Amino acid sequence: MDLQLALSKYPDKETLAEITSYIGDEPDRFAELIDLVLHGERTVSQYASWLVSPCIDLHPFLIRPHLQELIENLSQPNLSDWVIRSTIKALMKTDNLSEEHQGLALQHCFDYLLNPKMAVSIHVYAMQTAFNISQNEPDLLNELKMVIEERLPYGTAAYKSRGKKIVGEIKKKASFIR
Image (cartoon, rainbow, N blue to C red; front, side):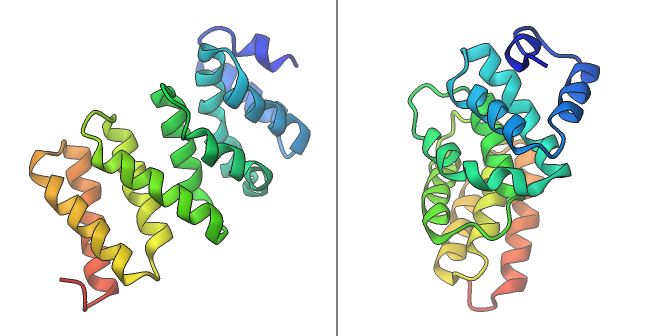
């Protein structure tokens, strides 16, 4: 299958399912998908980014070799919200990030949370990813809690729902956090 051709026009659900099935548990095919996310023409990159999450839902190991590139890609100027959202969502689903990956991913998550112009879905995935990474770091949890609570009154329903859930988890996790 020619992934670039398949993703050159808006893919319907059937096409997305076909491509996900084609990629399967094949690292080379997943690498081709990641290459399109990172280096494809903007539209192809956006459509390819939709497939990262369904692929790693089925085969989580596929993401490991690409974490560094995906996280570093978040530093690109004018990056599509679609690519940001799918990358943060993939990081949210990835267990046991290395300390190096955690630090840069966490920085991006806080940057997105503090940027009121970011899409709500990016805020929601960023707060969950930041929480997942920070679970054993009381100072980071406290900082995350403060950022979420500061923005709760102005958030959308989705932001408030996820924010209240995470703040509640932080309070349960650490009685020393105010």
